[in-house]
Image (tube, rainbow, N blue to C red; front, side):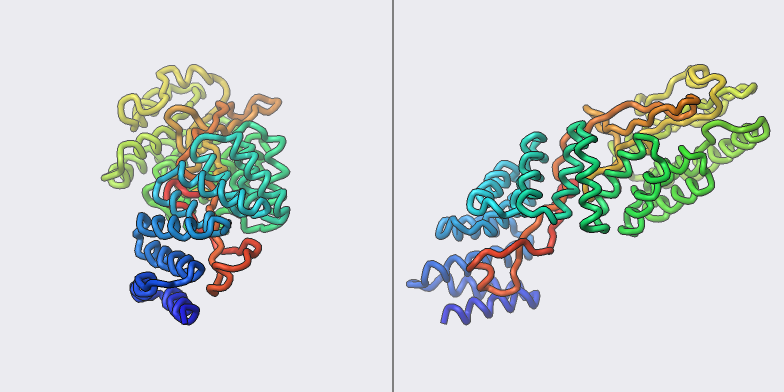
Length: 431
């Protein structure tokens, strides 16, 4: 009898009738004499109903109750870890994912999720070790390879990051996070053609992602492919009209080294037109923007406008758009690069373009305490922009937390199966 009622609760959940499922589970759990296995199952199902209704606290309480009855269920520990992460309970999430790996040492998804949670807590070394266990348990787990590559890159191990990222893309070409991370790594090595191809791939994989277009524009501009760079910046603006860094790139992109006096004059004229565009569009686009994001967006607008036999200081003064102390403007910027042609520097262009499945405002944003890394080496002729090396400050979330949600109740409470393919993105900074 209980089995039929549990199946009916599952059917209600599958049909989206979360309130009906919750009430049915309430009724079953209120009965005395219910078998422990059935109580376990009812608590798990009611937890999912609570979660669907965005009541994470009650969802966590129900899974705690279920695991008190049967602490051997690795996938339910994993599910509890996800709920705790979503609820901002980082320490409890780490503990739950740890329980999942102890209950099933071969559970790759739990190792990956443990790595995500450890990384969120700033424990980068432990996070790398956990995700290494994930790929050891399941060598075809593309997402874990992508996360491993990103973690190694954050730790400064680009030598170890690159093969992990390439392996992720070999296994699953849709791993956008791996494409972004590998693109950032190659861009740092001045392998700009390959980097641009990866950013273009990432932009294609997610039509909402303005940031991939932003990185593509910056990479193309470093190749002096200015027309295509502006097109990428404009696409970033189309995807997110409030991305001021894309507007700045569209308006102020300059050639690395003009090849003639006429080209320098044309670049200066284009820059002047770009300033007019900023003056007309910046106020409305920035209106209502949170101050922290506004500072991040405008911080990108640093540039060095070198002298080409003319006085460019009026242009430098005209583009002083940042709030007081917001950026890195230098009054002698032109003097610092005299004779090197036009050059520009910026946190968004130079920002590390490689978070795992990162969102529009994660990649390339300036960190307050620890700048992200995105360095370009000067080429032999000295024409490439030099960049500061930067490292990530641990963010609240990273990668993707994954859960196993079997279609039927027997799989939920019975024999554990290999990881499925459904994913959950953490609701913090992206997980």
